[in-house]
Image 1 (cartoon, rainbow, N blue to C red):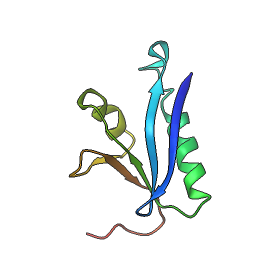
Image 2: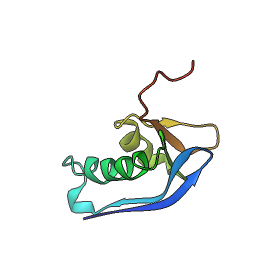
Image 3: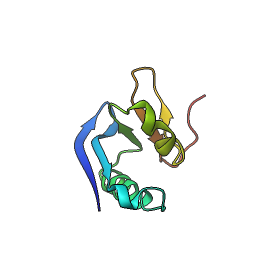
Length: 87
């Protein structure tokens, strides 16, 4: 099983405080479902970005495979809106 802690919307991004996937499920493609549920939750509220706070170094590759990008403050963000990102 997995746990996603949703912290609400701040600065136009849906905040995820905690993302946990049981060790026996890791590496078996089970991580996408909780991530998708978080995106759906925030998309229904008009949000176009998901921000995972306080990502540990050993977890960055996991989030990067789903398109999240590291930010200057150490968080990781995913843009899931329908328009092109500003360059």
